[in-house]
Image 1: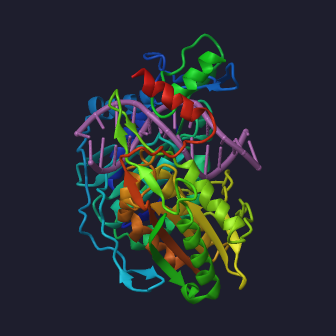
Image 2: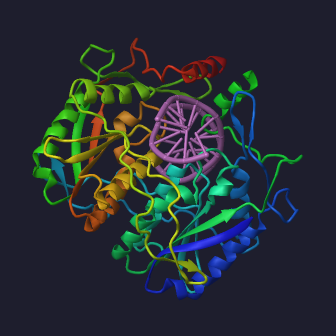
Image 3: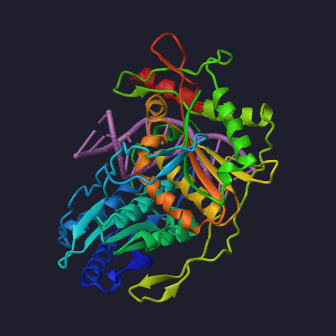
Length: 237
Length: 237
DNA sequence: TATGGATCCATA
DNA sequence: TATGGATCCATA
């Protein structure tokens, strides 16, 4: 798989020049590069999306890519996934107002802050959270918001969202995250840097190496969401 | 349907005291109150979620609620839905840096900013966008981010997200938006007020009036093939 | 083609 | 039970 670019939306207190960041960035770029299909080929070749009977599109599923990435980070790069890095629920809520009473009000925090795909600590102590984003594009918004909150609260020093280019997006599960649809929101997240003391927020864009129309299997798809419905429809058509 | 509360996350330049805001808030609260089931009963009674064979849960679909709300706003309250209020793609992108080159870079905006469920203008000229959020909880993040960007860019003066209480959430389609899961992020959106000249950002929380285990139909999932699919699957289990 | 859903899955 | 995710749908 191809690493295309890493966008640093903001950087406070020079995390960008730290050894920890350099080390982790090199590492996850190697993990991205390691993802191939067929496995062992050294190249991520995807079968191009294809229209099937009933007007539906056949595309590549995304679980395989995610599993390969996380696996390489742990086994080949030697990072330990630390599991949940959580924010307590008793942090300060902003003073908001109710309407129409205009009373001051603090909404209780009643959900946990779920954690990240991968959190680790570099040798210099830098805590980095990485999100491999192949969920729905709206899920990318939640991931970015979550990274921003974690940076604001000082529980991580660097946050990265890894997501598909628009070109890769076309050939994977419909409506997954992609840089194109996030591009109009970058200014919003960049704006949050004012509330961060130390921290870097980044997006890394990735892409397939090659596309083919030939005799090559699609990446397997799971049974999530409306898959069953879609399959029933396809087999009927 | 019950209006529970309206949270004003921020308010710049006293939109909260404007006549336009008061008028629109009263209006949409009436539209919320008008949603009943069975239709004409005056009460939104929902059949409680129920575990069915195969371990699945049977729940109420969400299309009906959305349709009733929008319909009431237009026909009973007399608001005109203005359709897409869009941001041009040529707005200024923040100066972000590439890594590792550290070059300055501006990611091109390659997606349109899709618009809101309902946009209207009050008699005093106040432009208000309303999002009726019964999509996935991650979609609520996108909606809030979008309202925030629209306020920052001055294309609306007030933005409202209407979403279910945690109690209502339990009985509707799995994983839809709810105030509980958004509660930990309110500080982030509140923080964006610094970049807004004039504008109010609000969340309105809604709930059913009653639950029943009795002989009462689940809210229909729509007039398309989905309800049929769901029944087929459930009856197979 | 593009964008906002609506729906059910996997797993701690 | 709770949270993040994956998958296809509806429609302009």
